[in-house]
Length: 289
Image (tube, rainbow, N blue to C red; front, side, top):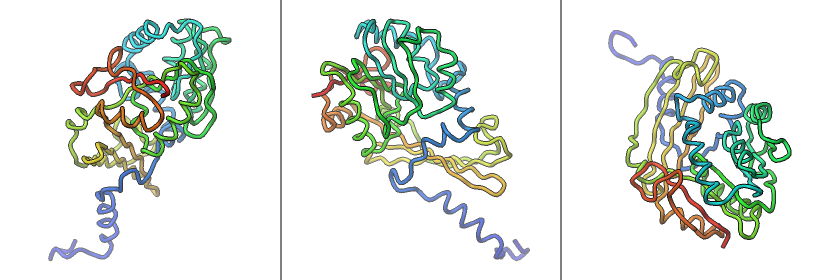
């Protein structure tokens, strides 16, 4: 800038780039979930975050996981049951299902997480297997007594993706099988505020092994009960984005979603989630209609 305050031509592209960063995207206009799990540096960071007992960013703590599996075992008697754990990550739940006597297959599109799960499995290999797969596009095992999708992995999906997933889960379940998952509540959406923050190498270099600046822009799509954390990562010679969409549900809206997908809600809450919107998440048990 000159002393007169006049903006030079060289500064215009930066202004335009900042304007783009602060432009609210169209709802579900981009989907980058796989980037978190397949970009080499991020994939390793996500695995470490999954296993870190000091943060709940990628997975609940082991005591909470143990309580969840105990609740599932009490409710469904896992011994001898066929169980598919979608988005299994490093196998923290699948391993425990197998220890309860279930015949388990874990699916995840992260090669790092699947490799870790296989290497660290202690349950009988005859009752526990892992496969790198995208449950939205790849085959899901058939005749399952139970399909689980835990830690709100249902929520980053668009309505079209959720419809695809529900169809695949419905086909995979045995006639008396159940789909168990959890979701973010609309109460949690009320706690979110819009805004943008800028940091250099945040989260101890989580986003890149290189020096970088990261804009985190948070947007709310109130009529649709959706929030977006948009991360714009600026490295030397490269700018890229990660979109973290989160659909939030009330008991009524998740029931409507499931009904449209050919499911009937058996119960909401209990075990690992509150039964109403007083908590940030709640669990759902559904069966094919």
